Amino acid sequence: MPETSIDVFAKARDNERVALLRAAREADIVPYFRTVEGPARPVVEMEGAARIMLGSNNYLGLTGDERVIQGARDALERYGTGLTGSRLLNGTTALHLELEEEIADWQGTEDAIVFTTGHQANVGTLGTILGPTDTVVADSGDHASILDGCLLSRAKLRAFRHNRMDKLERMLERAANDGGGVLVVVDGVFSMEGDVPPLPEICDLCERFGARLMVDEAHGAGVLGVRGAGAAEHFGVEDRVDLRMGTFSKSLASCGGFVAGPADVIEFLRVQSRAFLFTASAVPAADGATASSSAASRSCATATSSPRSCPFWSRTTGRPGCCGRPSTTPACSSTQPCTRPSRRAARCCARASWRRTTRPRSSVRSTPSPR
Ligand SMILES: Cc1ncc(COP(=O)(O)O)c(C=O)c1O
Image 1: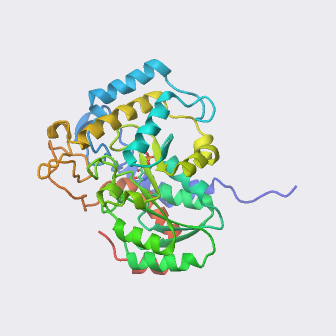
Image 2: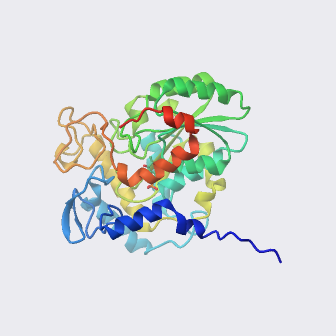
Image 3: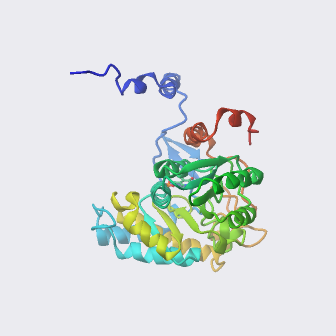
């Protein structure tokens, strides 16, 4: 009987990052995996001390909002602690249907679908609508979950240098000769760089080359645009973006994800997306919190509530213009997305693996550092 001489676990023992973590632990300087001991607020209790939270996605401060907490409690009381099954079988509640309707209305699309996490929304959408004969054109700063979805689909991946429209144009020229369908995917607000893509130019290029466009609004939803619908709304290109993805784990103070777009594509995802079909539905408390926070954030965005009730309300415009980061002060005075990098340390692993996978060595060397 032939026996392999290679142990698949060997990489766990020889891994560079594991060695680094061990050394940092020995020196007691590990910045990661610190234990939070209270609610997600601008100042948190962490390992027995009060710490200013600069790494959170709690952009609207809604994790502590009484309406959101009550929404979670109501759902817990009504549906229990878990649905113990997938959306397809026993995991769909009235909350999901209401949320999907509400999101489609908010995003101005025909339909929307709710996933258990934002990561699954990207993987489950890209891995389903793209196939091996298609080409996906992605910004090198796109989130790791976008890359994961692209890899899963086995579509041809053409990455372009972050926010460089000349590079996008070149990739679209090449993609046109690949022979399949073409999808461009960008973040609406880049999670590491903190900047936004020039969406009107990207729409122009997609239209010129007949490519579809998907925007990941994880960091833009809730904070950009008058309705808080995200970067597409902020740039006035909502009707030119084909698919809009978002998460509930940031402005909406919960956990989960969505994709909004044309009814036929969303219906296709409902019956075909493996990340939707083969995972358990979110716990009801998460859906209840999301439903309440989406209502709370919309009331914030439509200026019907007091500007001071929203921690990101712009004092200069009287609207939620936002720097997209949790504030320790009562209100944000910026009307533009923040250009300073945020959560860099926490995300470096995801970003590094994206760069390694998408870019040839030469292009990595010639890329000017954004920082
Ligand atoms: C741009 C972007 N897309 C998708 C995700 C995944 O969302 P979630 O954490 O809700 O699964 C994140 C999370 O950090 C993100 O920053």
